[in-house]
Image (cartoon, rainbow, N blue to C red):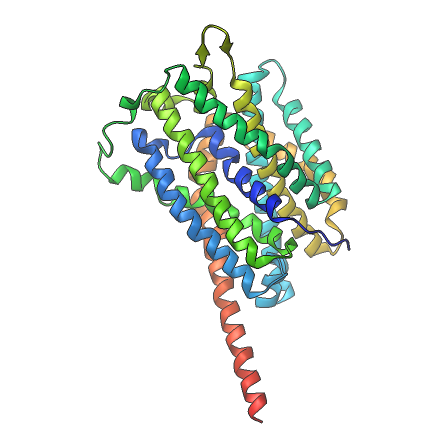
Length: 372
């Protein structure tokens, strides 16, 4: 089996694009209306706690991924059962993420092109990337991320230069009190997007410098949160809370407002690039998590499953919802307590608890052996 290693820069760019992914496409915290940016600020604190927890879990068994940890904690039979649950979950979320891409392209860019063709085209690219290996995905994120940062900065500059930002849209702060903010933040912001970092418990095993990874991962979450906070603030400031809540792709609509000297217009291509890169990385990371689960269960290198599973995921993403509104309701509301919270938080907490007990017993037995 080939050994795959990711650099710290690749991890940094992958986490940022992963967190932006669907979040920057559909917007988060909009239920809090003009205080949506405060929801993202709370999410940043929650995100730092969640990634710290996952890193601590990985530090208990260095070099082991989530599936191997489950076998260490329980038995292979139990681990296979849990692995089947997790690989199904990862593939399911990958299908939902890629559906976001299909809806974005079909409704905003290529309205005549069938959504099936759009999704299949990107999934074949993702399948090929993963067939080549996780290092190729890391290099993809590393190469294209500088353009993503540049385009985000340009978007903010153009909106400001075009006098499209109206700060009265975000005033007064806390006009409806703290209750709507907390309702929008907990538990939804915990599960989406920060709880989804559970997928990186499969990837962190490919990093040689794990100590340095902790700092890089924390910085990545903070940087991504600042970008999300800025984008939500810009959305509310440019569109107003009512338009922002009704829009399917609020950042894209905000970008279309740019008009400087009747010359610089229609810069929504910049936003589409940012969204496409985030969705590609996020969907790839989840699909990779599912492929590694198959590798664990069947003991066959995951590359053999890459293209077939990519095609199956394409089919799932199309049949998963009847339309975009159904897709959003199911993804953000129905799945929250049924799927996301149990698999992103409850099971990892259980694994951590069992790991600590087993570690404690091993240390106790070692001390007894030394005394004898």
